[in-house]
Image (cartoon, rainbow, N blue to C red):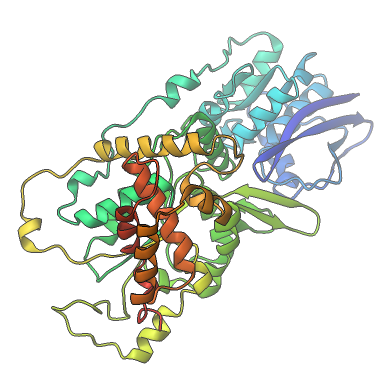
Length: 511
């Protein structure tokens, strides 16, 4: 007897339907084919124990199971449940005439209970596309899969629940989630709020500009100046995610297995990897590719604290994803692409001792040590960071001031208004949504300068010895400042403010 049960495999952020074919014949044996990995090969022991503990058994026959397409590598323990159901139907222990209408996934424990799986959301999306009636999966993953409308999603705790459903004994109901209601649950009281920050008004302004234009930013200052505190509060002033962005972000976190009983993500991610991170952990990959930190930060913020402490080769692999806003990982037999459109926020000390340019502390680093320290950050990487700002320690008078600073909610209103101007400006362009993504051609079109502004920019570049790469960056940032002012054109005061935000391009910083 031949039975077909359907499961799914996830490659990148997309799912591929897998057909589990179970054939029973005379004899004794258990043969599993179709490029399964070790976790799938071990499934026979888990299935045998789970069935035994639920009053069923692994039949004493020759069982041949093929996982089609047979040339596609399958990995993970999430195929336990479809394999078990195929064996039960194939051996006539249960009747399930409509089992082919469903996608079934789940890892079995020895008592028959189910453990969570990865990639439930992309699997549910694929099941809906291919016209399946429903999707059985562990109850821990049901919220993320139930986001997909038009598909019956059943969260199950035990293999017995699935058996009862197909036998007509159970009263298993599909989980229904109002996706729009989940999405519009906004947090107007963020955990990290700019109202907690004393002083640092110029830095807050800088963060507002970065958020409004999607600009990458680097904060330079001595230890204890508040760089990390400010960076952690940046997501609280970013515009709310659109429904499309929320689905994209949730899909990536689902593939990585990081959702933990959460439905649709409606808050922008904030990722802060340690400086000992490897290339693969940052950009993604591995023998079975998984998304890295830059993809986990998609539509959110990637914070690299103490930037020069990261290995240079780790920082260099970010150059292409920063430009293309996606990362492609190629292996001998397949290629996967993960989205990685994020805001890079970096912080660094100005010298190894940390106190260069601090008048109250002696500079204990030699020029050679400083040059070696700063040279860890390459020019091409700095070229992709629009805003450089120096952070100075807050004086005691401002630290002890009891007055409440402006809240993140108030700043976010201005940021959102500026983003709406940019959305309207770039609405006919497919991959450009905000100022930081403008090409040189678009900069010339939307950042046209009058004679006064040109003269000011020319004088600044000559006097401050600004590098050529600073020119386009200043124009992009000036365009964002103009959008915050709701100004149709860039004028000299916008250029003057943007010039202040290029500290590392000034002669003397990087030699």
